[in-house]
Structure formats: C-alpha cells, structure tokens
Amino acid sequence: MKKLKTGVIGLGRMGQHHCRVYANQKEAQLVGIHDIDPQVASELSLRYDVPAYLRLDDLLEQIDAASIATPTPTHFDLAMRCLEKNVHILIEKPVTEKIEDAKQLARYMNGKGMIVQIGHIERFNPTYLELKKVLENLTVIAISFNRLSPYRVSNKDVDVVLDLMVHDLDLSIDMTGREPTAINAYGLMPFSESLDHVVAQLFYSNGPIITLTASRVTEQKIRSVTVTSEDAFVEADFLNKSISIHRCSTGEYSALNRNGVRYRQESIIERILVPNVEPLSMEIKHFLECVSQKSLPCVSVFDGIKALRLAQIISNQVYEHNTQFIAQPDYSLSMKKETQSSV
Image (cartoon, rainbow, N blue to C red; front, side, top):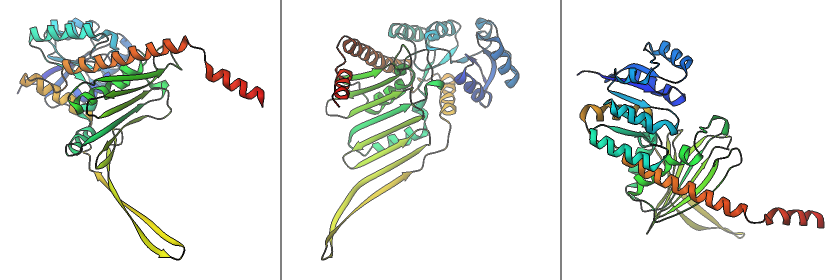
C-alpha cells in the first residue's frame, strides 16, 4: 500500500513530538515541515532528514495529511489553507479559538469531504481507555479531574481553561454522553492577565457531579481523576498510567479484653494493568487510518466544538464572577487588619 505523505506545521514542543512519531510510522512518510522560525525548522530538518519549507503552500503541495501544532489563534487560518489544498489535518486542541470559526471549519470540511481530527490526546491515553472499562459496571456519583502544571512550562497563548481544562471537558462529554444542565466556575489570575487557576463544576440531571480543577501555578505536574461510585472509589493517574479500585469495605467489632472491644475494617484494593503505549502514537496512528479508510475520527471537529463551547462558558462565567468581586469591598482583608490591631 502506498505510504501517506505527511507534514508538520508548527515545530514547538508538541510539533517536535509529532515529527518524531510520523518519522517512525510504517503507514506514512514524513516528507516536510514548516515553522515561522527558520532556525528551529533547520534544526528539525537535519534531525529527520526532511526539507523545511519556508512557504507553507510549498509544503501543502507535497503532502496528503498534516498536523497543525501552532498557537491556538492561528488554527483556523492554517486549517482552512490545508483543506483548500485537499490536505487532511490533525489539529492540536482546542480546535480553534472561536466557536464561529470552528463551525465554519466543519462546514467547509463537510463540503470538501476531508478528514479533520482534533488532538484531544487523552482519549488515546491507555489509562483513560482502561478506566472507561472499569466504569462500565459502576453507578457513578461524582468525578473529579485535576490537571495541574508549573507556570514556567505552561502554554500562555490562551487561558488555563483552553490550555488544560479543555482536555477534561472533552473527557467529561465522552464519559457522560451528554452536556451538563448547569455549570458553576470560579478562577484567579495570580501570574498573568488571563486565567491561571480555575475550578468548575458540571451538574447533570440524575448525576454525576463533575469537578474540574485546572491550574498552571502549581509546582507539581498532575494529571489525575477520581471517581466515586455506589460500590467503589477509583483513582486514575494519567501520567504514571495507573488505576486503583477501592472496593467497599467491611467492618466488625470483636471482643478484646476487659479494656473494651476492637474495631477492625477491611478493604480491597485492585490494581489495574495499564498497557504501556504512547497516547500521541496511538492518536496519530488513528488519524492515518481514518485518512486511508476515509472514516470519521473518534475525536472529530464536532467533538472539538462541544469541548470548546463548554470551555468558553466556563471562562466567561469566571470573568463575570471576578468582575463582580472586584466591584465589592474586600472584607476579608479589613477584618484581618482589625483583628491584628486589637491584639
């Protein structure tokens, strides 16, 4: 079978990983790269022995499919240019910066019959895939996502909702199969002029309650989810690829001696074996299969739109809350000063 000719647009941290994976695919051949920084493009060109194209159109004329791994505000224009040249695309999340642009992209994609996959990479994380199997037989009450990163290594071209929380918003939609009936969100901007730390809650009729925390102000990188169900408590670590299931415990009182009785509680912890595979490799392999078979990706542009819509609702709500708080006097500080002066 003829190998698909692929390219990578945008050679930052994620773009470089895309180059590495494409270069090792049996079903495809990395034939070119493009970046606005000629020095970075030259270095990657030497590393993978492929040409670095100064003009994007020159690259698009040589390839069948491409990854777009550029800053979010550039996604729409670059995606449209690719589709105009009949190049199938894998766009790093979020799909675009604006809902209107994403919808226009979807309409144009449908008209051209092209493949557009969105890079919500956690859908291909083996920990998440195993977690879904675990939850099939559980009645879920609550889910809590934590996605935390240090500020110095975080993406700052968008706020933390579009950068980090959007991953878990996509997983929330995938896990529940529906969108929430109500949303509540708060956040802070300690390090920048955009949201750096956000906590949101999604409410669904008849459950579950989903709590999402996204932060780029922590000194530890965390990617985890906990699930509370009627019969078990489940912990999953996306970074370390581990799942623990705490089954409901049993307790009993036993006679000890004249000093009283002893209470003993027993619980069962199951460790789930998670395959050691790279999510990005699985994501790109799925993309190439969809291009070859002309099939709909499991993370389509429409999935990207759903996650983006929730992200924008949360961001807007946080900014609205913050505006209200700024207009109110800070009673907490004044009370603290009064307490100190009275001591």
